Image (cartoon, one colour):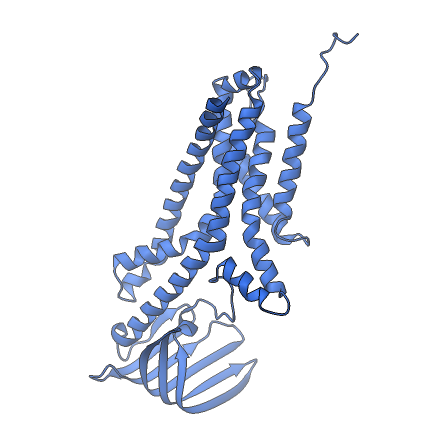
Length: 354
């Protein structure tokens, strides 16, 4: 049965890997199209465009990974059903080999999902932030045209009066309207881009910070004001986010603190739920398609559409369930195990009972 297990595992994994690769490539192309303003507005090249789209890919790939595994498994089981190999597997008592193959694919898929959510995605987020800051620093220091308003990110407009020979910016102006109820305006006679251990910083001199918050106006004048570039380049301002920290770092920091904050618990739970989603979709697909059917051909809902519907339902349940992001995966596991138990239990043949 070892050969049968390897054969089935290879069959299940091949369809899932091919589908996941195609989805990632399409998502990367979409990301390139969405970030095309790096070339047309911010003066960056094709390599920067492709690299930034690649760094933005892990969160999207994480969303589609368990669906790709489920569709790949469903397609492989349908192919076995069409070729009657699934009937042979059950006839020769190969159900154990099939379950071992599914378990192997599910465990490998769950490990990949956990690696993606706990390590790869945070690493990509950090590098994406660094790249965005570097692009913004280059935009301000060399690419930004004097006397012309330029949108560095949606909601943030920059304007400079000119540059001196030493790289100093004259007459700096920035308008931040990313939050609907708060507007910040930075005005300075001069500015200089500096790189520190924490990233790029914009050193503003002889200026003012004007704020309109809920209709109330306030103004602060300064001789020098250090503004982190990432405060102007993010789509929305963030405060103490955990999305760019890997799970080991978050756990270490939480263990050194007196108590675990709800934000840390929610972040870790959401990340580890990705592995449960892969296990849940595999168990549910096997419970539906892992057994041969003697019904005649007719209108049958494609399993690909069914897996997509299950993935959509799981996301909805996990998002709105009061029990947390693992709710949808646990429901899929319970439903799948119930279907497998019902369909594998011994049945008496009509007319043979004594």
